[in-house]
Length: 349
Image (cartoon, rainbow, N blue to C red):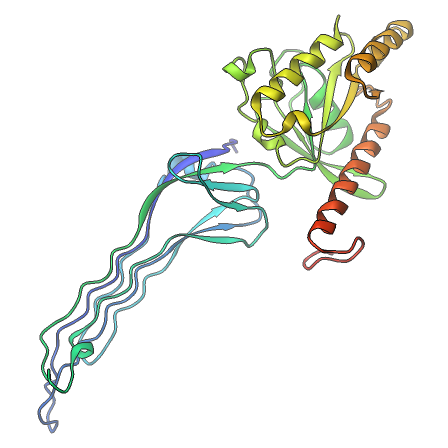
């Protein structure tokens, strides 16, 4: 399945059905009278967050969604049928924007969340509705109310606890395959990863979701390489794991380059908690490794973890630190929501 994280679609709710003009003509019932029924309601258009989806690829091949109009009213005070709703099923983490692609209409982050995009028109009144003591035989009905229509943007931001960033060939995919059961493509050329990959990492008998993003290069803010195409998926992460290639001539320069691109993207990515990992230590002499770690510490003013995604050395330490930060962030979120730490939330096992 191809990965698609942005789509523009047109949605239109149904128009209400018109009311009916009808008069009773039945044997043994004198005078008769108006009995035209009301029209039915037009269908609504909803967006719903469902399980089992991780891409918006369905909206690449169908961009127009229209609900049916309501049924016509008829005689004997029979109302028209209400039309069925149209439901756009989207994956968890989907944001819905107006046509300007800037105005946020909804953010679907929980399974089962629904949002009304376009309300269907109400049905029109039949002539039975208009009868009164002074108007015993009205020949009047009303058409159904019109529906709504709009263009919207669907933008997917994957729900991950931690995000992997770095230059191409920093070993991000190798690290992901080492700590999870994910099977990303791994090769010795740049931009092997062309779309985000998710993996579930186990640490201390608990789990968290790690997202591997395509590599950044200098000038990504201006569209170089894959640009900032997928950086939006890191916005929801509690922590960033910044992997650096230990075999690079200047890891400090590499670190500064990626930090510059994160800042240029915005969204607060440059202010997120960051763990720096110097990868591929199995291919570096001990004295050179020590020197590079020292330089990185001085420049970044934070600890640097040494690891090797190939041999697994230092990987458990990195995973444990990631989970510690994620657990702290989860606890802070629960506290902000008024949920005591350790309390079982509704729907959790």
